[in-house]
Length: 165
Image 1 (tube, rainbow, N blue to C red):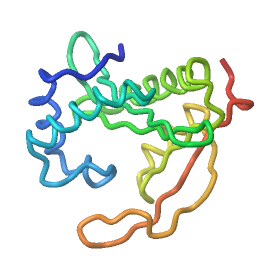
Image 2 (tube, helix red, strand yellow; image 1 turned 30 degrees about the vertical axis):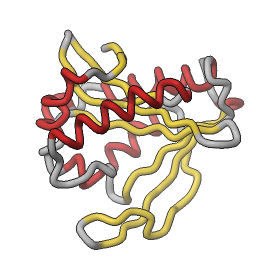
Image 3 (cartoon, rainbow, N blue to C red; image 1 turned 180 degrees about the vertical axis):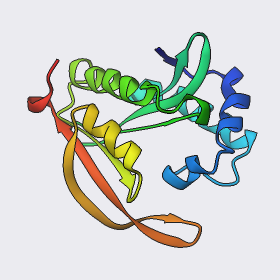
Image 4 (spheres, one colour; image 1 turned 90 degrees about the horizontal axis):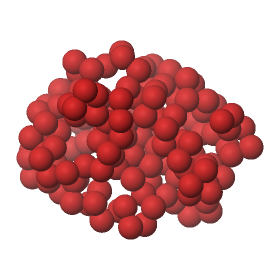
């Protein structure tokens, strides 16, 4: 598995993967998801590289399997997130890519804290966070709106002092 910059040639595959109802259910991906969304996502991702925020392609054997992002915030912290195409889930891609970006965040970007949210009920994302060394931090009440209904989100984080290289 490798991480690389997103490129315009990824737009069709991203659009295809984001048709899976689980991606908008568990992430903040718009629904319905169109190629226009994918192109905007890729263009925004390219611009963010200059600020030290990364949206990256997760690639395995030359094929895009998902994306992972590390978005810098204030106070030396960043938010991490990911999604994986349906046929590539359960193979460790989300965990491995999260670990790589956490390492980059602490070592290269000199962050103090990296955090992630998941919508209540998304046990698979919770497990990825735990495997990546993150710990429960708080409940964010009615933080996510999906199909007109509000849901709680759970936040996990890892601090630089807790990070084991």
